[in-house]
Image (cartoon, rainbow over the protein chains, first blue to last red):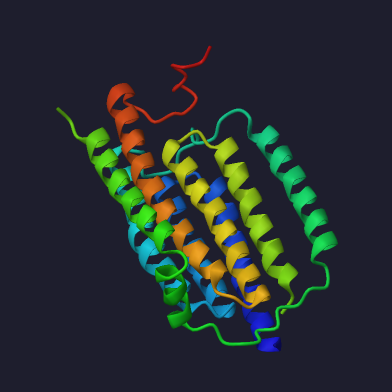
Length: 163
Length: 99
């Protein structure tokens, strides 16, 4: 448990640091790379929680596809690649106050509700059980998700094509 | 490991994402901040799944990942359209529907 806790705090420090840099950096491309750090650290957290399949889906879909898609977005919108001071709007301090208050409320509520609960890691959750659950109980949401992906694909093409 | 340490990490990540959505005006950076918030939700789902000793949390987080991928695709298409019409992606200037 000690080794897991050390790994958790290292990953958490990397995730929070990269996330804070993501929302404060002046460089759009660097923000995308910080996003990759956050997503990779989250995959590590999933492995710590014994969810290997979701961790690798996270690496493939998020780091492999979403970050590359966002980098294409940066490229196609010709965002300035170097430093730029025009990325934040005027309500930065209001946003800071809102998020700090939200964090305070969440931390108070969570420590009140789950203060002493410990994750036992009783039985090992195998990937076979995840797939049994997806293709058994949750097969209709799975099919709806595939229709949603098709609709999103067609919608994105229809929006972005020029004619 | 305590359940709360994962929930606290997710809360911090979510609040950083909220700050990013509110404070950024570059549309691509707003999409990245939304990804942060979706990731916080995934951490919560998987932590509760491990806590309750079942796989439903993992199944739901897979659905969340699929929907996030669809969201980012459509979102970037919309951002490209805004860029093509207005030659910038400044969200402060995209106020056509403001009353």
